[in-house]
Length: 177
Image (cartoon, one colour):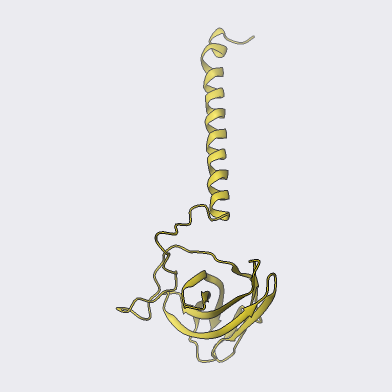
């Protein structure tokens, strides 16, 4: 037999907790969906890429927001994720045109260290892709990298040099002594 106070006091509390839990879950789903579909993207204030370099500190990365464009990095791979100093590995990234028109753009693969400092990069100019077309860009890691953890960042820029996509720390790899 239940106590008479159970229905009067505890049952409404459980219902309210359930309602709050459902509301929190719904808000989390809405925010996640908004981020996936770029609802929070602001056209009035262009984003500075995670890997942008300020004139005062040309080798330091700054963490900021991301603007995604019509060209996306859809696949990536490395020949080795863990290797010894003096060895190399190749990063391959596949770019895809998600727009309905032909796009000409440039790309930049940047290797940074664990302190977010640019170590080296490779630029690709005048890449032209038809709608849904893909292109793979590649970069070999230099054999002179010291032991440590490194990150591959990829930037995509329109023909005027304006950033349209930024993929910070897209891939990591580690070099041992």
